[in-house]
Image (tube, rainbow, N blue to C red):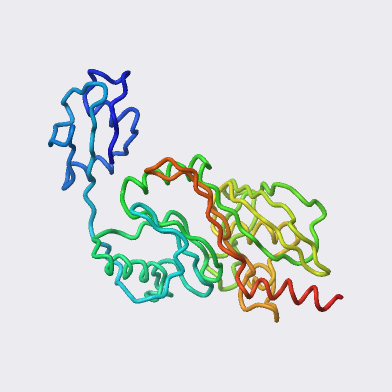
Amino acid sequence: MDEVVLASEHGLMIKEIIYGRLGLSRGLLRRMKNGGKVCLNGKPAFITQRVKAGDRISIYFADSATKIVPQPMKLDIVYEDDSLLIINKAPHIAVHPTRTYPDGTLANGVAYHWQKQGAARKVRLLHRLDRETSGLILIAKEPYAYHRLVQQLRTRQLRRKYLAVVQGRPEAKVGTIDQPIGRDLNPEGHALKRTVTATGKSARTFYRVIKEYPLVSLLELELVTGRTHQIRVHLKWMGHPIVGDEMYGQASMLIDRQALHAWSLEFTHPRSGQQLKVKAPIPPDIKAILSQQLQQFQ
């Protein structure tokens, strides 16, 4: 991480810039002290040293190898540089190891990707997707990038958009679902099942109808909050569950999972400051539903 001292910062100590304009977290500062270092104009420095306008502060953060077992996996890499990795996740793959899915997850594949690159780093997922949901997953390669992207996620500068095929045709073609979500007290064997409930946590989802078909509609949805199963729960509450969603609707002969796809990410690159917009194409199984609707009712 390299930063040039501004004219307004002339005479300040390095730590005042670190705590001030750079806004580094305590966790990052620990990484800087434990194995990392600070340099001023290319030479090792103490954070109590004072600086002049135009000086260059370089901060290096220590990292450690992931404890996730590396496993070979074909990754659909949409974007990669020294700070970021964006993967288009296939359906039927868990994102992170759990008791139910201890291995064969996306994180195992990413750990193997790090191993092939000869890098000792953790697997830092900025967000997660349900096992059956396809689409984009953003992964930070180093602590500072993760720190900055988490800030964007909290302030909604990191925007996540989804596509879903839902049953029926929503009456309002554009809208906001603003309903609290909590645990379902009658989960019918699904411990993770959620529901709209007055005692739940605030949850908001924007939606718009992209195209209507005889029996289904294609919607674009954007998360404002990130509750468990938020889109699936909100669409069920609205009366238009996702096609193929067994937990919140019913199984479908047209698809063997919920027809939900994380198709767009918009954010500011944590290093370059460049605005990035990345999209993943609609997967074949969701395209097949829409094609079937057109053919069946022509």
